[in-house]
Amino acid sequence: MDLERRIDARLAQWGLTREDDSPLTPAASKNRTLICRHGRARRVLVKIADGPPAHSGVVREGEVLTRLTPLIAGANCPLALPRLFAFDRALGLVAVEWLAPSETLHTYHRRTRRYGASLSRGLG
Image (cartoon, rainbow, N blue to C red; front, side):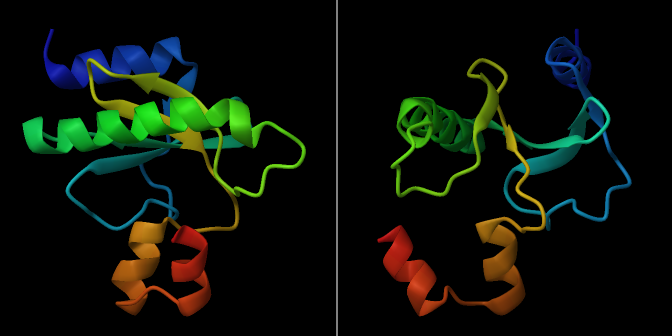
């Protein structure tokens, strides 16, 4: 089975439907990103690693979010992160809740060419 069909099969297993014409689709980067729907209203951002170098980055991101998920579920957690929806290490897929209205940090940086001081402090 080719990669695209394997990705579509995994999305279907997760109950996700591609929203290919979404105006929310982030700007192109070294990874592909999709906006999908889970049910009628819930949006999910899916990162797809395109090739070996990107694959390790997406896997690392998925592993970090997997470790953070129990922490961000706590009532007093200071982190404002999207919740991990699903993660497939083998295919290099990370799916997170879409925080609406919002844009990805990558898209923000591409749009403004900077990271704001408060954002930099928050990330630091």
